[in-house]
Length: 160
Image (cartoon, rainbow, N blue to C red; front, side, top):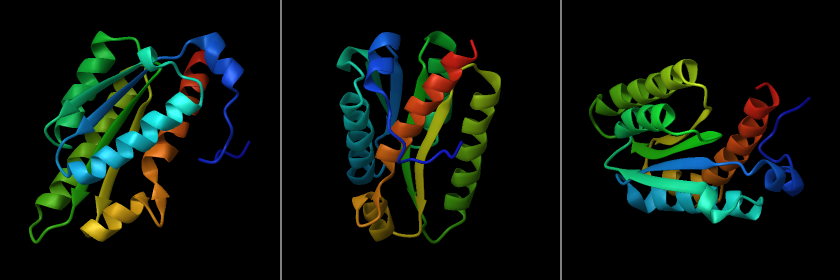
């Protein structure tokens, strides 16, 4: 089976399952993360997820996505968690350390807890690239991540 961000979701399956989603959004680079959030949230709603089945939290930056995703995975029973952030390369190595730490941290949560955590953290060279990937000429990665979250929620529930 080919898995693609463009696959279609059966809305009847969603209504019958009453799936629940968490979205955690970093406030740093909010001009980018708000667009990613909007794409993800609207995709879940358009796919048939009820508004009351989507819970959103904000955290200061992308690094804080690790702790918050872990805490939510531990304390709640969501079918999928989407973490949204934006890192833009600067002149120091800080960008590299953050990218590595965040991706490893989210990977660790996926291994440890029984909930898929979907990585929607842009790691871009510049602001233009971030805008292009958050609703610009390349599309909106938030939409792709919401579709992935839906798919993984179905996957999780199919083997329980």
